Image 1 (cartoon, rainbow, N blue to C red):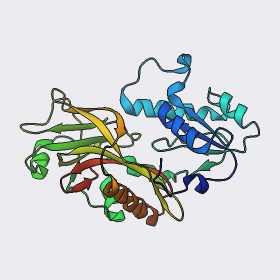
Image 2: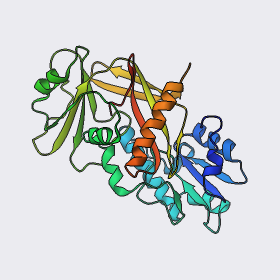
Image 3: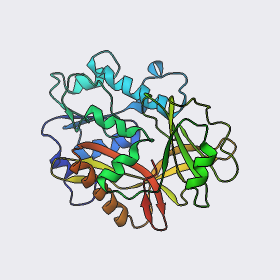
Length: 294
């Protein structure tokens, strides 16, 4: 989970740890890294069938359900059973890797908890401010109010390959998994984009970048940044809808030294701004390097 020589096991707090992950393979990796005597790693994918919702409207709803499930560590949900069996006196430290950032997670001490203000930067329409303040190069973009002028705004950022547009209702919870993102190459924007009155939605448009979708992620601590191995995102375009299907992430093949260096650079920039905890940045690996589109 980290490069050889970076002792993440020693950087985590002493004593028992409870790690809650979205995926079973992530939980297995944490369990193998920290050992069963010290760590209980639980996968939300392993939730009992009776507590799983029958339908979820995309990745954002899935993340919201995960947050509600983690909130059940207060004794009201199924996670409390295995957690209390492993840590009956509730002195273990809780680790919630990105993208998990629930507002409530029981009474256990949390490692790397984010400040509430940082949730603002999960809004894809305002994240440019974060990149600029952290010194992270990015593609040019335009942010507008409402969806009436998308064709005109898109033409102004199109570099010949197309346009990507993120639409975020004001005051809405953070989106995930490509929800709220549309794209087009030629002609008008997709008709699947909701019609929104000015003042109700914010939109961000940027060039459609050609390359490999990549996730850079790690931990920003008080004294150092721990980069995790970069992942390739399996992102499939849906031309008939003008959307993307985010189908998961897989380990990248080949030399990833430059991407690990970029992960560290992003983490250092976040640390200078006072950020602590897990982070992940989904972007595109182009011919000229990594660019964070969202």
